[in-house]
Length: 210
Image (cartoon, rainbow, N blue to C red; front, side, top):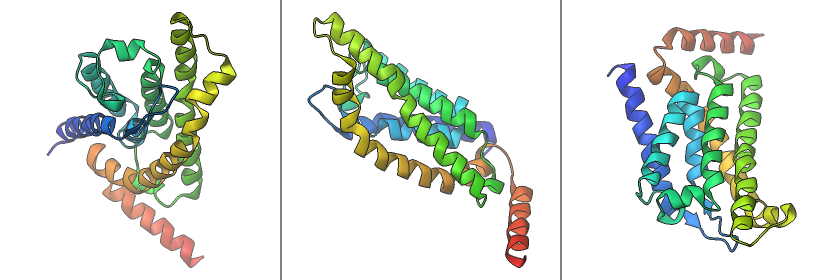
């Protein structure tokens, strides 16, 4: 199977995972549910890169905009994108693109590099934070338009603070899976890294012998 076909398969696979994440959601009083979809979105950027991961997220958004119930709590339609949670959906896309762009193409040589582990953890953390940058202001804008203005502090209490524990768990899982699967993604999606793998193993042996 050639790389182009594999990339198409993985784009579709991650789009399907993001869609499936709509049924894994915990509703909260603020109206923004705890969802697993940001986990799958950011993971797609980490493994597939900014463009291919971004395509997965864009495909999910287009399906939802067309009315297919693939957004949180199995909702769909343009009303969701324009509603209080719409900013978070675009935040998922931004976080995905950011993670993929800064991590770059997966490479087997990164697997045992402590500096890359730290860099990966920092980038993924920022990607999760980025989700909230359009999410919170858009929530405040929509609620104000409905005659229910929210202060920034109130918006934080409704749309940020309750999600911290869940996002921390998803963050740790994303880091672990990214470090474990990026070498595999590099091998199958971005070409043969067999030589790079040999170099990595040789470098590791040399470090152990020193």
